[in-house]
Length: 549
Image (tube, rainbow, N blue to C red):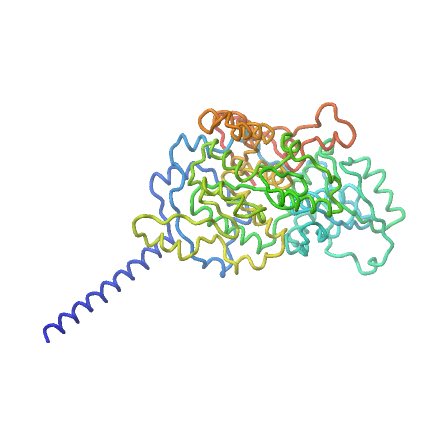
């Protein structure tokens, strides 16, 4: 009897202990998830990180109910909190007193009476289409046209069926430009079958071309269709009000659809849980490698697959490419391995949170292994690579493991899946909001993000000097140089003036002529200074980057 009583007491104690532990665990999780209070050291460091998230719509709106309930782990201290590391790795470049200035000049007038309708077929990926749409807003103003909401490219490499309203906030686009250009959603029914002229506007054209050649078409046609939209307007030598209109269109009117902004905001919030982060636009995707002809570190089978893709893509004009020469000229994206060496040389510690802004990495795991070995905390829309378990039991660490380390679930991303432009928009938002942005290739997204961050006065945008870097990387491969302080100093010195600080837009390369002259200019949307950034007061030596909306 006594023995049975003892057993009952023991079982009761176990039951009570388990209940108390469960209650304590749930309370701990609730505290961590709902309200994370950083340590004093963490707070001092985070106070130094310049954030202007309230100035972006995607960071002002609340996430929708089904997203806001998603449980995610609290922050861990993943980077050095020392002042010296902040100065070296995270401190935004000075804005040198420049702030956005997009308001029209006093001479700006309401839109003139429309002479006809401008239809636009955009072309390329998300960022190429964004720039083209903004240019066509300006063109519509120049030729006194009513702009029909542009049609997105559905025939390019990505085969994306998204419509304008799937990617962008159509109502806001129309409403915010009402004082600049009349915009309608569809061509009036009575004009649907009207004879129209299809024009390929000449690339990088100025006012004379549109006023004297295109505008005269209204004498014969009510509808003009622009067959392509990319690079159809000059970067320079346009009236101030046209340049400012381009900026208003790009940075104020053309914002993403509410569901994209909401999901993008959620991804940013989840990245922020790990502290300041790097957004890495890792342009190591099949289409990029096939188009550029870059095969460094690829197998013969992979190189042949890419060659066949390039050969069979009719709108890619250049078919024969020397991959070695292409790389030495700096025309190839850095490989994931090279990016890892680059980040290490810059001084970013192995626990730095890195968001991979990219579609599918070509070769997948086989090409990501070396980068991941240096930086285990690689994250993307889909997942981030496994964080090692801690030695001691930690309920929050266990919670991490139960979540399978996903930054976003399949269910959350399902509305955007199979739509390359919408997925790219999510990467764009996380990249704009990052503390440091680094592109492995200076393509359309890199230019768009760099320009937007420069306009907003956002944190560092480090543009790798690929031509100089590949020579250093080749020395490493040949054994004539080793990783360490010497390499680090060389790479840091190379990039002191490549951090995204405000500077005047570069003109054409000396000696170039014709279209090559225009092509060599710095793109307007990668750097809108001096047109849309103005120095508003005396420069203070310690002025930090900030934004005034």
